[in-house]
Amino acid sequence: MKKNDQMQDAVNRRTFLGQSSGVIGTSVLGSMALNHGVFAAQNDELKIALIGCGGRGSGAADQALNTHDQGPIKLVAMADAFEDRLEGSLNNLARKHGDRVDVPEDRRFYGFEGYKKAIALADVVILATPPGFRPIHFEEAVKQGKHVFMEKPVATDAPGVRKVLAAAEEAKKKNLKVGVGLQRHHQAGYIETIKRLQDGAIGDIITTRAYWNGNTPWVRKRADLEKQYGRKLTEMEYQMRNWYYFVWICGDHITEQHIHNLDVINWLKNDFPVRANGMGGAEVRVGIDYGEIFDHHTVEFEYADGSRMYSQCRHQVGCWNSVSEHAHGSKGSAEINRYIIRGENSWRFGGKGKNPYQQEHDDLFHAIRNNVAYNEAEYGAKSSMTSILGRMATYSGKVVEWKDAINSQISTLPEAFAWDAMPKSLPGPDGMYATAVPGKTVVV
Image (cartoon, rainbow, N blue to C red; front, side):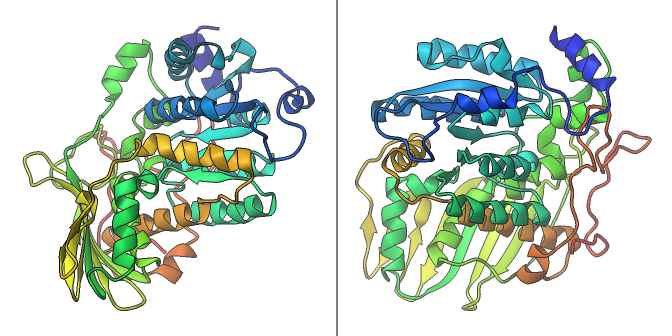
């Protein structure tokens, strides 16, 4: 079935969690993965399934396949909402990795439901769809007893975070290994810098700062997409194609992007904030294809010890840009992202390390093959929640307590997933989407 025909067919059939191209039975799928439990010896072939075949998913699959020096490994299944994304990813991976990529047509799954069938084929699952789907997919992977690498953030709202935390506990009980794509935790310079700071290199840490100020990332305009595919897009397909600009699937850029910097400060503090207040808005980046997210957020996070993290993230052209983390203490200061400490114990990292995107996969697959305890899901969930807490503060304009935020019952996700289902955020008569209004928007 051609991709345009397949999409139109899917649009005409309302289904909860969509359609799949596969017809393989569950018993057959299950028999293809390792049958001797979660431990894989050096000579066991590990089978991988990729869920979400965009750029980051393709990169993660590439890095997973690069661990073949630890033991045999093969990509055996792929799933994506869109056929064109999957096929492009498959072709690129096959060109690079040859026979380590073995994904025939009956192991390629399209639509919303295919992830379950792809997961069933694998020993290790890579979850790299847009983050709104992450809690659902992670829960299913753990239910099926699979090791997981999942990209950050791991959720876009509090109910999703709670789902991930619950699945993380189940993963521990099943001795499943879980990696999360906060790759700075696997970056030699960061590891050494954080260790020195935690050991007191700048004394008591009083204040920290975190930034992701840059330009607007990609945008996929509705008119361009409809011209490309030769038909009108449903609202669901449009939002998924242009996913960065919708809270339910992206989380806003404070969550999708700035989580990296917030996570570094949480790592340094070995803690998570207890409350936050902030401000933000959509001031410069406005238009019918820029959805509902803000173009700037400024947040003050408070930790239990009274220290503050001051956070900025911005998507505005022509402004001061910085992607960095900083710490200020009683005996000095640190540029964490540059691995520099100044003060009584001045120091600069002089070593080298492997690409952290590769290192995080090397570490995960080492844990799988050597049965080493390895579960990054909890801190991934709580750092995701930190970013969501910040968004709640900027959207509401109020002080938001962690305990209230984590228990929020407000779900941003659609009530159903199907090509003709409606997301909660819809355009007005002028094509514009409503954005949060500080002072009025309810977040908990």
